Image (cartoon, rainbow, N blue to C red; front, side):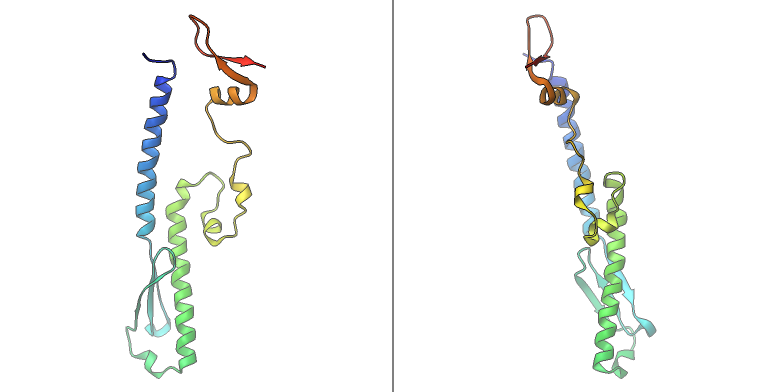
Length: 151
């Protein structure tokens, strides 16, 4: 026996499945993000992953051999930071179309976004559910569809 809500339930289920597929694709794309930076005089090249983890460090030239340890260390830190900034920018670009309007992906990723601003004042829900929450319970009468009972 079917109910008046069967079609809506199937639509919700199909929408949910589509969202799951979209999230899976987004997650795959996010995992493939990287950022690469090359230091001055190509003394060093660094590639980081989506979370800023160092994936590779290369020394394309022998320029590092003539550097003092502190100079090389500073160069390494600066180059890793630059690569991380590039990876974060690429990650924000991938995420931006999937975030609510007005949400700055770069600020979200950097931790500077106000999370309270990201949440709606009321949760999204179908009109029938909203009426139920706001006004009472759903009742049925013989020969009629569901209606809201007012308390």
